[in-house]
Every structure is written in C-alpha cells, then in structure tokens.
Image (cartoon, rainbow, N blue to C red; front, side, top):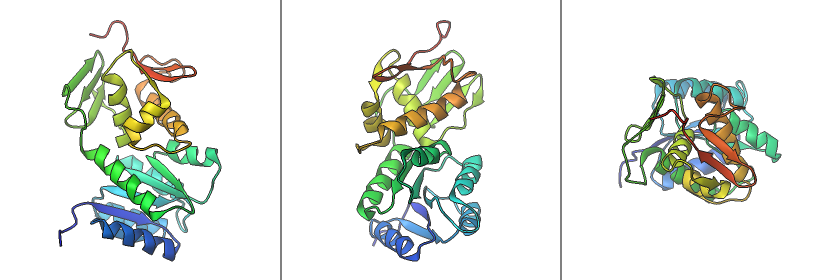
Length: 235
C-alpha cells in the first residue's frame, strides 16, 4: 500500500460526518487529521503542514469563520468550507473569508472527494505550459512559483485567487464568461458556482487594486463575465 503523500485536516464537530469524510479521504490515499472543534483545528494547523483543510462553519469553542481567518493570516492552503446554511449569501460570506470552495450539508462524500482532488490538482500543478513569467508594469506573475507581485511586493493570494489571476492575465483583453472561469479555475461545473467566481474576483480586486470600485486590471463585462486589461503605460 502506498504511503499517503497529501495531508488533509478535517474540522467537523459531528462525529458521524467527521468519520465518514475521513474514511472516504483515507480510501483515496490521503492522510487525514481529524479535529472536533476550532481550538483543536488551529492547534493542529500550527503543528503540521497541511495540503488542504475541510472546515465546518459552525464549530464549538472557535467558530469556523474565525478559524478560516486565522489560517488565512499565515497560509494560502486550499480550504473547503462545510455549512448547514443553504442561503446563497451565507455561502458567499464563506468565500469572502478566504475559503476556496464550499459544500452545503447534507452532501455526498464522493462529491467532497471530487472537490478535494480538483483543488489539490490546481493548487499544485500548472495545466498550461505557457510563459513562466508574465509582466504588466507594476504587476508581475511568476507562474512556476505560483506567486504574484505588485510594485515589488508579493501579493497574499489564495490558490483560487492566483489561478483566477493567471487565467485572465494569460490573454489580456479576452472576455471570459463566469462559467468558463468556473471550469478553468475550479475545475468542475455545478449550479450556482458563477457566484463563486464573483466572490473570488471581489477578493482579488481588494488585494490588487488601489480602489476595487475603479479597477485598473480586472474589468467586469456586464452580462458576460470578466477581462484582464493592464494599464496603458504597462510595458
């Protein structure tokens, strides 16, 4: 039997769900660390390096929102947020906290495994063998290292935000529909995920633009999607 090479932190207070998720992930060859509350989750996160986090939103001791914020302060590890709340705004809130994806309970463990695979694949493997370095004046994107720099300072981007920026920046001026970005950035197609892209764009603009309401890199094409257009004076 192969030794697991990817480590996943599963944070869920309901024992049955925690154990079921852990069993499915372990069956797929992942190394799973369980945590039943927010305090244990942050303690494990500080002690070990994880490749992905499955995080319940409603947790005892420390709420999932606070756990997500704390993780994002020190890491861009992919985070899948679990929530019992089905309202779209609740899900969007999770994405705005820095989560890369979400699942609403009850969910299929097989679907969770598919999401985990997709997130790990795009977080670690470049799928387009093109230029390794993109320059747009103050904005520079290092494809090989999955890093972006603005005026010489590294941007603190999540894996989803970096993939979104890279996808748009490879073809300046091209308009991408939301569904195209869902497929390229998230790697799957599920109903409602167009709003996921809107949330990631909002987060990316907040880090990239001086005034997110007056963008200079990522523009909204109303009724269609988004395009990347570097400033005119960018060389």
